[in-house]
Image (tube, rainbow, N blue to C red):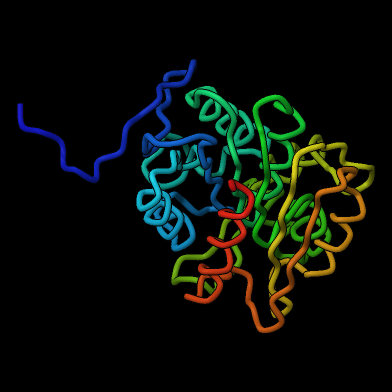
Length: 252
């Protein structure tokens, strides 16, 4: 049997038999755990930049693909926030010792949920344009008549994506199950340090949401950095350098 290519991911088989693809680097603690955004995977610019930086300093890191995304098993239209939170908890269970969790967009929402569910394991959070509750304010509250009809008929609808030729898909189960994980209507009781980066030119997640998030987080060590000309992804070289500096400060 030939050897697998060097870039082939490892796989964790879940209780239902489906596999989650992940990449793990050994190194010093705490381990960086990267949570991608909606419909994204572990090969995005932020994940790759952090992985190269972590390798250079001998920092442990784990990144993975959500169920239904990238190389992980599952149909995307069947996934939910709770299911992706279960993915994150399964990945956290692979880590020995504390984790510093980096969450991008929807990954920021799941990172907050993970820290609430596993407060003894999550040592710090770094959130990039976090999108807590986006299934309500970003999807359900903005449905067009055609989108409602598509949800009723097929259980899914599509919107054009500014980030590629393929449209972005949203499902009825995502919206309905997302209501069980809403955070922005109450205090978010976390004691770990939190760093938030948000672009003020973000067309997808209003930067004012991060201001509200700062108000709702109960811990004292919470800092928000606004990038005036930054977009949603914050993946320009200067944005990636800022993210690395923030993560390095959290770790050190």
